[in-house]
Image (cartoon, rainbow, N blue to C red; front, side):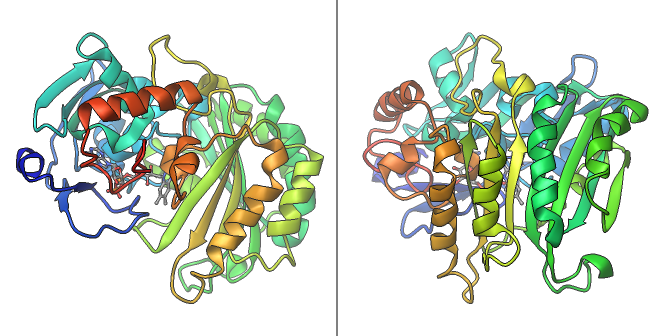
Length: 402
Ligand SMILES: Cc1cc2nc3c(=O)[nH]c(=O)nc-3n(C[C@H](O)[C@H](O)[C@H](O)COP(=O)(O)OP(=O)(O)OC[C@H]3O[C@@H](n4cnc5c(N)ncnc54)[C@H](O)[C@@H]3O)c2cc1C
C-alpha cells in the first residue's frame, strides 16, 4: 500500500474471488489468500481471523467447542470480505448481521499505515468498516465474537416448480409470523442438467424452501409444519443438524463462478408481490436466472448493539436476492432479466440494496443505494479523508468514483 500510495497506483483486493463482480484493468491486485492466521479462544468466545481465511475453516475449528460463526449461504466465501459487507447470515434472525459481532480490525489505510480500530480506537473508521466494505482500507485480520449453538434443526425442502404459486403464497403468509428462533428463505431455482444433482431434481424449475431453527427438533418441526402441508415435496431434507453441515441449507455453488449476485430489501412480500414475482420468474416465464429468492429479515437483524455501523437492511421485512449467469451463452440476457424483476418489485422495495449482494450496480446513484443517506454521506466523507486519490477503486466504490 505504501508503494501504491507513493506511485498513485490503484489497488484491488481479492481473497477468494467470490465477489469479483467488476473487471480490473491496470493497478495492483493484492491477494490475501496466504494470510491464513486463525486463533480461536473458546473461553472468551472470540476468534482472530486472517484476511485469507474462508468460513469453512473457522466453522470446523469452532464447532467442537459448541460455537458457531455467522457465515452466509456458502462457507467457501472469505470471512473478512463477507463481514466487511455486513454479512447477512443464514441464522441472522437469531444472531443479527455478522458485522454486529466484530470486535476489532487491523487495517492498512491507503496512506500505507497499519491501524488497529475498534469501539475505542478510531471508532468512526471502525463503524464505517462494519458494512462499508473495502472502501477505506485493506483489512489484514479481524477479531470476531463467536456464538453459542447447542441445537439446530434445519435443511431444505424442494417442491415441484408447478406448485410455485401455492408454495410462495403460503410462505408469504407463514414467514412473517415465525418466532425469532426461525430463519427462512424460499427460492425459485432452475436446476441444471448435471449428474451431481439427484435424479428427481435434475433439469427443471424447483421451489426451494430453506429453514433453520435454533433449538430443539420438536419445536422446529412444529414451526415448519404448515409448509410441509402445502404441496408434495420432491425432497424433504430438514432435520436435526450439525452446524458444520450448514451449506446443506442453501445448497449454493461452492466455487467462484461466472455469475452476479444482486438484490433489494423489501418492506413486504404479500399476495400481490408473489404474483408480480411469479410473472417474471415463475413457471413459463422464460426467466434466464438460475435463482430468484426471498429471505425473511426481522428478528435480530432489526437490532443494532447501539454502536454506529454501516449495515443496511435493519428496517426490512424481506430481502429479494437473485443470481444471474454471466457465461457467454446467457450473459446478454442476464442484466435485462435482473432489471425487469427489480422494476416489478419496486412497489415493495425499501429503496435500499445490500453491498455484499449488489453486483454490477452501475454509477454512483446506484452504489449509494447500498446504504442509508446518512451512512452514505459519512462514507463519502471518510473516503475523501482516508483515500483522497481513490486508490481502492476496483469495487463497490463510494463517492465520485462510483
Ligand atoms: C455462492 C455465494 C453465496 C453468498 N451468500 C451470501 C450470504 O448469504 N450473505 C452475504 O452477506 N453475502 C453472501 N455472498 C456475497 C459475499 O459475501 C461477497 O461476495 C463477499 O464479497 C465475498 O468475499 P470474498 O472475500 O470471498 O470475495 P473476494 O472476491 O475475494 O472479495 C470481494 C471484495 O471484498 C472486499 N474485500 C475482500 N477482502 C478484503 C480485505 N482484506 N480488505 C478489504 N476489503 C476486502 C473487496 O471489496 C473485494 O473486492 C455470497 C456470495 C456467493 C458467491
